[in-house]
Image 1 (cartoon, helix red, strand yellow):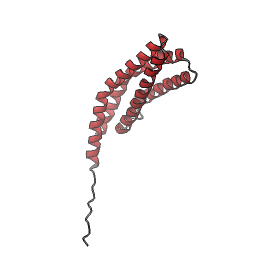
Image 2 (tube, one colour):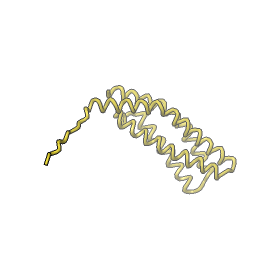
Image 3 (tube, one colour):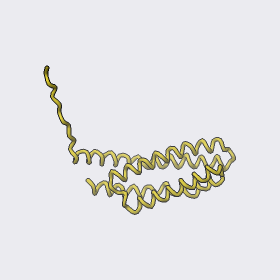
Image 4 (cartoon, helix red, strand yellow):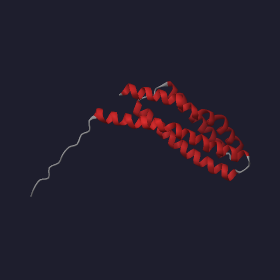
Length: 146
């Protein structure tokens, strides 16, 4: 009986870090499109809710909330890869987004669609575009880590 030889594969940590850096930069480049999409969807939500079209407004909210959740996962991954989680702008941005989400959750639990619309229009929509400044901080941390 022949013994099968096994090979041990090891990745080069420096190469892996470079690959993660490239992927993180690509994700950062795509974030503005993602943020714009979330803003458009949430703006549509507030528009529909304010017009009294609760069904369409809540449908847009569900899409926007799902996309926001995916965006926040991406932010977490980017900050982890870049080791930028301690940077002030990132901490502040995450805290502000969290506060907006908590407000929207409260409005949804109470089925207060006027408050939900206000939370989105006055809190989330002005906050999302601030990602550009945060992204620059993440980009700098990525560059420093490489």
